[in-house]
Structures are given as C-alpha cells and as structure tokens.
Picture 1 (tube, one colour):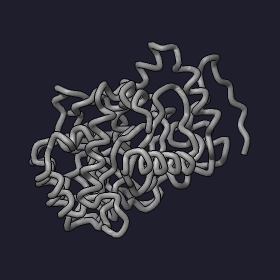
Picture 2 (picture 1 turned 180 degrees about the vertical axis):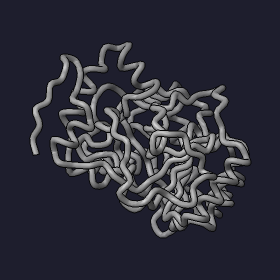
Picture 3 (picture 1 turned 45 degrees about the vertical axis):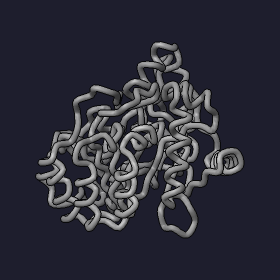
Length: 320
C-alpha cells in the first residue's frame, strides 16, 4: 500500500500515516504482561528520563492502589508483572507490593537504577532474592564518564558496587536462577548500537575489568518525551533526532511491540497502553480508566493509540 504524504519542513511524517503506508495497524494481541509504574520519585534526575522523575517528586502509588493492582493481577493472571518508576525501591511499601504480587505471576520484575537499590541495604536485597524477583537495572555504559554524564557524578562507582553485591547474592550467576539484566541507552541524540554486539562488549569488559556477570543486556533508543525532549529542544537536536528515528523505522518491529502485549498502570491506578503513553498523557482507550474498573485486559484486536514518540520503539531492532 502506498500513500502520498506531505510533511512540513522540520517535521516527520505522522507515525499513524507511516503505519497506513506500510499497510499496518497497531492493535493489541493477547495481553500477557502488566507494567506497574509506582511513581516518579527517584534519587537521580537523568537527562534522558521521559517521566521527568527525580528527588522530591510526590507521585507515588499508595497502599489502596497497590491493593487494586494486586487484585487486577490476580484476576488477569499475567505471565509477567514488571514494577517500574522512578526508582521503585524508594516507594514506601514496595516490598509488600512485590510479596503480594508474587503468587499471581510466574515472572515478577523490579526495575532498578542500582544507586537507589544500594541505599536500601542487605535486608532489602535478600528479600528480593527470596521472592525470586528478576532485577532489571539501568547501566548505560561501561564508560565512567558517559555514565556519570548521563546520570550524575559518582553513579558509576555506586552502580559497580551494587552489581558486585548482587552477584554475591547469586544474581546474574549461571545456575542460580536469579536473573540480572542490564539496560543501556545512548547518552546523546543518537541511536543505540547493535544490541548483540553491545552485550558482547559489556559482558567482556565487566567480567575482565571488574569481575561482574549479568544475564542479558537490552539496548534501547531514548524516547523523545519529558526531560529528554526538553534537552533535545534546548540543545537544538529535536528535529534531527526525530528524523533519525523516522528514517530508522523498521516495519518488522510493529508485530512485536510491547504495547501489543503489555498494559501499564500508573501510580494513581489509571491504565495506559505503555509507559510512554503514560508519560505523554494518552490513557488507554482515550479516557482515564482506573484499574479497579477492569475485570481483565482489553481483548485482542483493540486499537492501540499511535503517536510520534512511537518511532523510538520501531527504530532499528525496535523496543519490544
């Protein structure tokens, strides 16, 4: 299918238009995962953060919403529940939420920025291990300078220290069943390198220089929302970055996009197709709907909202 498209100078073709031009629709498949965003509170204020999380942000999930999320997970029986933030480690009652979710999913994930996890101490880490929680950590680079430039001075050393402690607990160590995954993303207005080659480099350098092991590495493009979009605008990189994303559009990624199989619930209980639509204020189905209202996830075939930030998920190998 082809379609004549007129795009204003400095803008990119609307994402929905690109989908139509390729004969594609963005609709749900079977929803198998629930992502739980427990808030914007974080001990870091990273330049690339699409949620503009940071110290002092008041948005955190309260106990009543946590209870509703657990009831929803029990009703739906998700194959995976992925707890994210902000820094979820800093949210009060987070261990209670993880323990309550544990019986309702075979794969329970906690996203961590490592420095916040380090602040919580050995008792907290041991509880994660005992619950069999998968830990997915932000670790942008094997370079101290790049890491500290993106996340703040001293983050590199603290992150390495926390990775060593997780290895001592068995996380990332073959045969323990304790999964430790790293997430790398670019420090500037460019796309990430090939994920397989990046994983080889991270695995080689971390093992040889610091004796650190991990399970998997994911390499993702930054999404032009929130604090990262503001930095792109202020640095004069927004138009160029959007153009890079649009030029790297890969139609083969659309079938595997996470928004087709995942549902996101915010700290206030409102549902979204994904964490990026949450950041952009695009609620599921076009209207705010609380998790307590839903018996289960939307059926297969339900349309997913398409927006121009979706280019970040379809560039190159995609963000799935």
